Image (cartoon, rainbow, N blue to C red; front, side, top):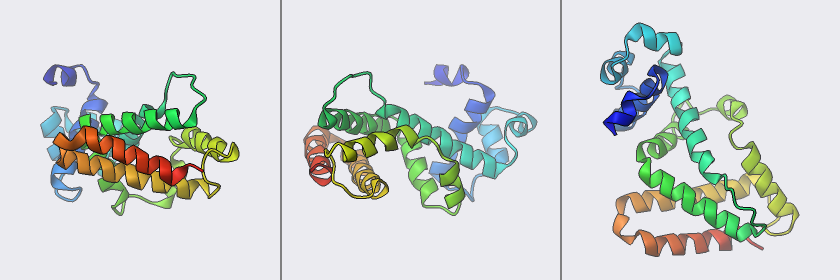
Length: 189
């Protein structure tokens, strides 16, 4: 892991370190000096890449969310919506269990004052995935309810499953099956 950190750009080192520090200590208890010192990037260099601590906080969220959403992209040509959803479900959970800091950071961010309507409006990471959901609704594979609500319900069950598995890793295989079954029952017609 340490070798992986060495090959990161200075900007990436700041983001990785900031996520770890913010998750461990909260936004208010981490200073830019803490981030700079911990990641080994000079403060001046850090501020060459980021305009402020708030910029670091938002960039960390966007980075984690982009990494999370990347797990929904599949190379399969399966037209089976259930199979595609199951792939996404398992991929998102596996990624989150491996990248717990990023997952926990996203949760921390969306429940903080930093999360706002403006941040959501600037966020285009969901557009392709949102279109996939809309198509499934239009094709009468998913319930005909507002796509934003359907995705929110999916996300809540997904995040609850991930959080449960973080604290109960020995029960992973059993609960993965149960959780996807509940997900499918929730969204499918």
